[in-house]
Amino acid sequence: MTITAGSNVFTRRQVLDAVRSYWGFDALRPIQEQAIRAALQGRDSLVVMPTGGGKSLCFQVPPLLTGRLGVVVSPLISLMKDQVDGLVLAGYPAATLHSGTDAAEVRRVETALANGELRLLYLAPERLLMSGMLDRLSSFEIGSFAIDEAHCISQWGHDFRPEYRRLAELRGHFPGAAFHAFTATATQRVREDIVAQLKLKAPEVLVGIFDRPNLTYRVLPRVRADEQIAEAVERHASGEHAGATIVYCISRKDTENLAAALEAKGIRAEAYHAGLEPGPRRRVQEDFAAEKLNVVVATVAFGMGIDRSDVRCVIHAAMPKSVEAYQQETGRAGRDGLPAECLLLYSGADQMRWLDLIRRSAEESGAPEETVRTQHTLLDQMHRLCAGAACRHKALSEYFGQAYVPPGEGKGCGACDVCLGDLTPVPDSTAIAQK
Image (cartoon, rainbow, N blue to C red; front, side):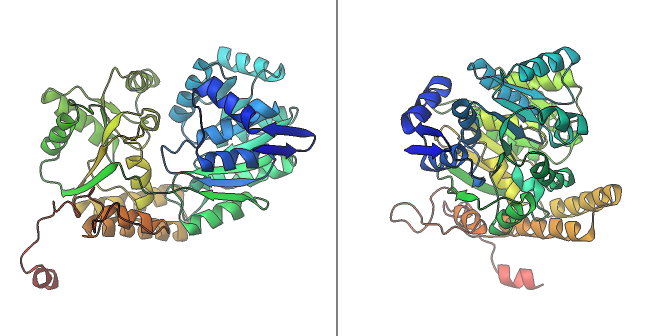
């Protein structure tokens, strides 16, 4: 791989030397090479790479070679902090500024920026779009903007955030910078919307394989959630492939109640949600990353699970609000390639609860009716996945527009409750449904 970008020529060896030096990898996946090539050429890109696919390398490697500052936009403070901590530990010149950054750290980062010492700066969209920050960044030679969690810009995405819509304004401030959009989950419709909303110019569009064959999906009726979850946690706490468990709940109160219930059963578990004080929240995050804590009961505010490779089990204590959310959260299991389980405890009441939350959120935020209808549609699709009796791997792949080919000569995936024969058929089910 030889890449010519203006007067610069980059070789594949240079790219691999950088990857080996900072991350210890001897090779890149094909989609990573393609994304890095586009970035070094200064081309816009859209990269859809399922959780655990290594998309962060795609925007972390190029600034090391070009010597130009890269700005990473991310909606989660915990995720920004975790990535920057890991980069700094590896000797990579990176920093982040967010609402929790103290004055001394702000001064240190600004000094490093002024001296040209940084290669990556992580910012939340709200902070980036402040006039003071835009003015400050305009004085530097910025090579690229990497928009992480880019599905947030699309009203058809599962986590639409209005502030992401304003990111297209950056084009006017930084006409010479390339723009790269990254997401783990995006249907064809969402991909097209991302390109349009960010005004990407003839982008390189790269889409990875969504199926994760090492994951076993199970959807069970929720009967006694605390007992069902405790049993699953204990199954993955010992043995050849022992590891961590993340349990996702809908509300903050749910996380605290369930963590307490697991503690009462002798399982050390901590709650994590955005309403915690910064100190306790940081401690839980760091303990999990350092493998001092193996069970976290969290809302979706918990972004840390994606950077711990030995998560052996991801449990949803209730139905997620979309297939995209489910794919992204279950993708935090088995990042090391070893077998992992994704357990979803489901009740028909979950859909009604989400509908109420969507309604209340829309009333508080004044969300347009079209956005609310989109959320209802996404919820219906998740409900159908839970209630369906088709191979889970097949259903997930086809949802994202990819055909699924079962492994081996078997008819099913061999890694979901449907294909493993875990489902119990109901006698006269058609007649019961009709009644």
